[in-house]
Length: 212
Image (cartoon, rainbow, N blue to C red):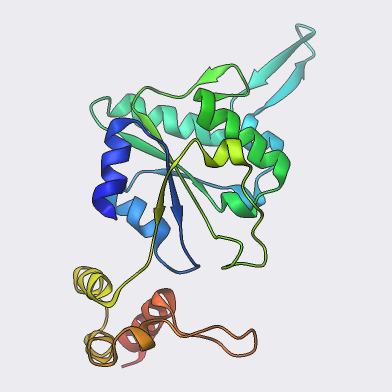
């Protein structure tokens, strides 16, 4: 999975990561670019995504103001021109259709609000839950869907144990998952009781370290 993601990023191809909640989609991107700029589209507004226009009473003119995320991305890309930096459009399937439409323009034209171009060393990655994995998910419009190379994330025990070792997950948690296997790494969610998943095992690790 990581090789495909890295290959697409290096090639300038936009990537879409599919997967259930807690599959570690965002953590995979942070491993590739710790300074990535993350946009949570579920909570985005037109102004936070596209910027806004304000009236200058002194000149009598409207001034276009860039969104905060674009300023951050430009700053990081200008600081390290020899490095690729990622714009991570998270929870895109949970966004309103109007917000998805604005995101489509960014992905398609690499422009924001039709006036500001993304830096040349900026790359686009999006992530979301499929409709079968989340009741809050919306279907992605076909033109937007077709603009991405798609990677379907499925955390397996071997890859999780490698990650757990590198990220100092508590030895008791590591040993338990290594012994029990995939049926304990993720258990079904029935809407009534909490289920196990990679993120919750990380929570349990933190509690073990804190309390002994």
